[in-house]
Image 1: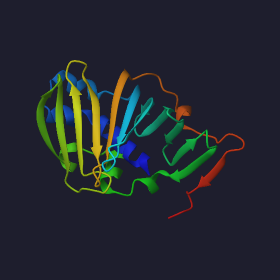
Image 2: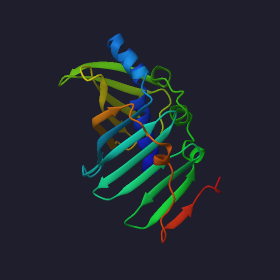
Image 3: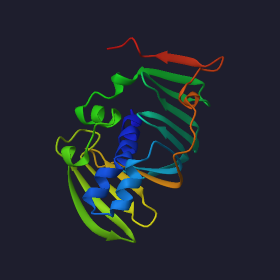
Image 4: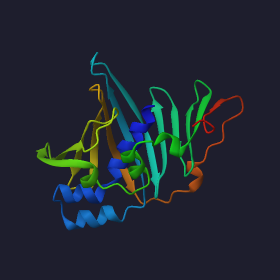
Length: 214
């Protein structure tokens, strides 16, 4: 399920305080990131198939609210709405008129993933973090997981020290496929209503309810 990787990507983005420490950024940046409670951003996601070298580019908007509420809405090339609530996850495809429902705990069955989504992850505890220096004005960090998983064997993050935020992240899976997300137009601590993280399937939508599965 690709959204497991999406959650991991966003969770890495939210581990600002650890990233700041690893990259030896300023105390001011550290404090700014520690204080983040919500954010909105536009995203561009690039999926790269290692075998064929083909790429798929998706665009949309992310809304996040502490401790772990997430709304990930893709608008191009096809619409998709992923909502991670406290106990339920919805993945809705309006053009196909189908929605998938899961218990949140069902999707985060790895120890690393559970720590991320619960807000308890620390990059230095789950990864070997290597500062690779300046990359076109951004600080590039290499993340090697201490317990590699099929969906994550390597990751990179790029920190913009001037804008005081993380600009891009790349997750590579066991097969060498890449999942890169770049954030722009980031709005820190906007007023975010909890209703954004609720979903009721429209009439006529087929619902595949997986909440009763083990």
